[in-house]
Image (cartoon, rainbow, N blue to C red):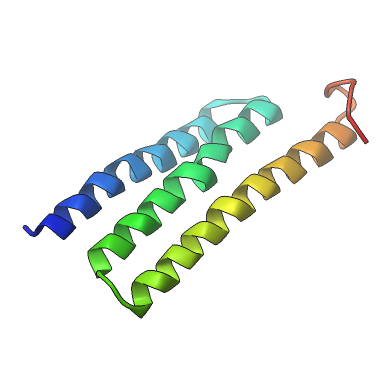
Length: 102
């Protein structure tokens, strides 16, 4: 086992744990806002860690750059998407929070 492979495993384990915990939160939580909060770590922490682990294991080169770019897009896009979904849910849900900034 090389040092690069070991470093990839160190990144992969918490990334997979974040993805699995988010999936469990999606299945176990019933409130739409709780579910939205439970899924946020999957896109902001879990997927980027998995992508980073893959890039480390791949080694330097074009493939690693593509993987890192994908991870940045997932992290940035996931946060924006979660925020947008929360806002739309609050606007459409009659039982949702009363105060929504426009």
